[in-house]
Image (cartoon, rainbow, N blue to C red; front, side):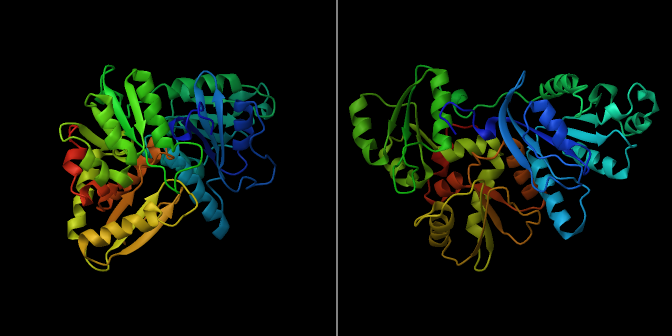
Length: 407
């Protein structure tokens, strides 16, 4: 990703869902004006979700998602269907594609209900409309769609073959996408343009060569938008930097891995938090995440703790998720819990085996996916916390790291 590119997790995610051979891939290709997905008359051509970042006017930067048919069969088919449901968890907007050469049936309704249950804005594209020519009134499916509660303005007849209705579909997608929640801020609402903010970024063997990790990039960009003064410094240069600047910063933001060391150096009257905690507030539920960290006091031998990361990366010696966190947890609790690990799009539907979930900041996951994970944990009664919050709790600085927030 280029430094000026919109991060994937910050893009509007538009997913195309429906049964096999409804024309999901063809319709998406028409909407985007690109051949992003392979199309075929053979059922089940799309075997895995296809993701593509692009600019879609008038919406701007989006993530397009083509998915396998949600009526697939057999053992392999059920795995494909699960991949489609994983994509649905990320969708900010769903385009349900129906085959216009037949009337909608119970399988179509099942897909619709899944979209509605998740509260996802949606439109319905009735594909293959060219087959009917001028005899559109012969298609009786519209009555069924009305029974299902789909309003007329969300139903768009289209033809991926001829391009008929595609511009109208794009307009309806754009209109549906406008119904979004108010913009959330990572840090801009916590500071004033006249403030000085210090960012502490350790450079170790796990740091990506020649670039900053995404949370650091996003925080820096938002602070630039506000117009604050910034000082970016390595953890081993923080003390010297604070002595030299001649004023106390309004806020220090640190990488969680050096939380304890940075806390010792930063004056007590200066607000202190971490990139990970900012993301816990930005994409999750800060109050419940803090409560989840306190569960660490009750951990017993043999308890299973799930450590989940939203991205996949090469594990190195000293990896925070698989090595540092388990070691810190064992040292703090004096117990010997079991640890399980997931990464990327994998997140268990059944969380009952776990006593606690510790999740990364989720910078690579969009807000929809992170909300889904938090809601899953809450519904199943499993405490869930975040890397930065847990690390602050273990090191006895959680209250200090939350002072700038209203928790």
